[in-house]
Image (cartoon, rainbow, N blue to C red; front, side, top):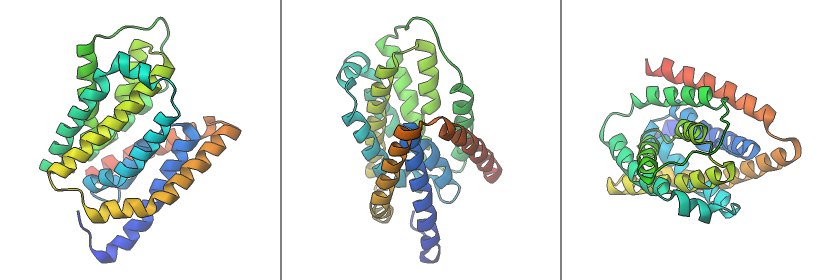
Length: 250
């Protein structure tokens, strides 16, 4: 995953812009960092490098979210198969990503973005549906596979929430836990293949203060003005990114 030094400076600049924009969007909306950062990075670099660059910022962002979440213990007690199986699926997905040509996964990434955009406008209603543990485990495996392959499993989360009409508070806590465990599976997957590139991780660490500052600014904006207008902006950006990914892959 090493790059030509002549290109690296341009890649560094693009990475800084992408990560800070994604962090601001996450702060302004309460979600969206890997959803926006991964496809944008995949347009300017190898998908494996894009995923590796987002690992450290995503882990920290989700740890902050969990730290401010009061219901994570109840979520873990009721839905523990999800985060556990997500880690397993993520480990398997990362192994696949590192074993074969990642280029075709750009199409999968674009399709997942489209699925998210189509699903997230829908609303569920009615009483909450109970899901057995074996179904939660299968769901977690699918989420983990997507996390390992393309770093995004938001459409699965939205579809599950629509089907089960899950309590929003518990849903946020459960999937924040699953995001953390999926990152653990990715780290284990990269480490087992000796693919934790020190240069890429070093770049992520150097850019981390700017990412956290952008996140903080986004949170301040959301508290003052709400996030409705930014949600519309994110939808438009994701449609454009999905189209660019498909064009580039072809």
